[in-house]
Amino acid sequence: MKKLQRTLWGLILFASAAPAFAQEAAAAAPSAQMWVVITSGFAMAIASAFCGLAQGKATASAVEGMARNPGAAKAIQTALILGLALIESLALYTLVIIFAKVTV
Image 1 (cartoon, rainbow, N blue to C red):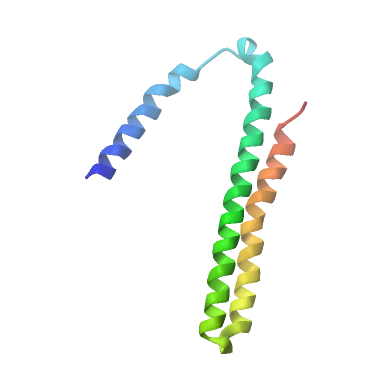
Image 2: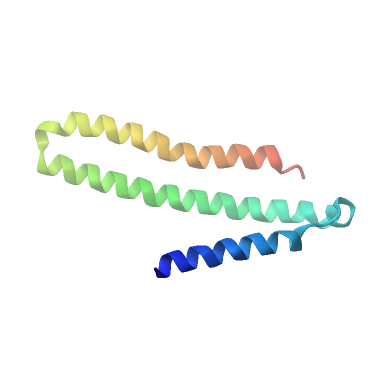
């Protein structure tokens, strides 16, 4: 019940706050580029942090699985490599989007 209440309050907050951010393009032009650069840095930091956490968790789980069942080590290793590639793609996509959006 508490989680549903929090979700509803969050939706109400986001819906009511949207008009507050409506500005004319001319008024926001000089400082808008600055915010794009700053938020891009934060986006890359967050993406890299979560990629590192996910890769550590995936590797730890794979090593534990291989230790419990050495016969399935090859299958686990293949799945691990595929999973790590998909996890790493998150950071790479974030980097590509940052390079596409940030024009200093």
